[in-house]
Length: 70
Image 1: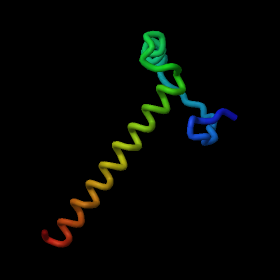
Image 2: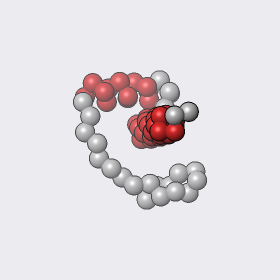
Image 3: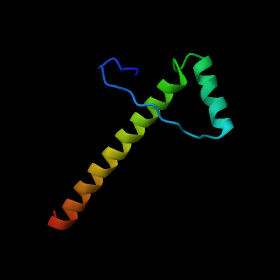
């Protein structure tokens, strides 16, 4: 099983995506923007998780302010 630089075990998953998206992704790989499809997808998922975690934390703070009236 492949490992990351941090020595974490990687898990293989299967994803269905539209052909057009795959062609665009492959073009980024060909241009050298990403070293591979897998790395591009990992980066996209990492960014999504970061954005959503930030949004949830921000929303929780807003809810706290509303509850406390501050």
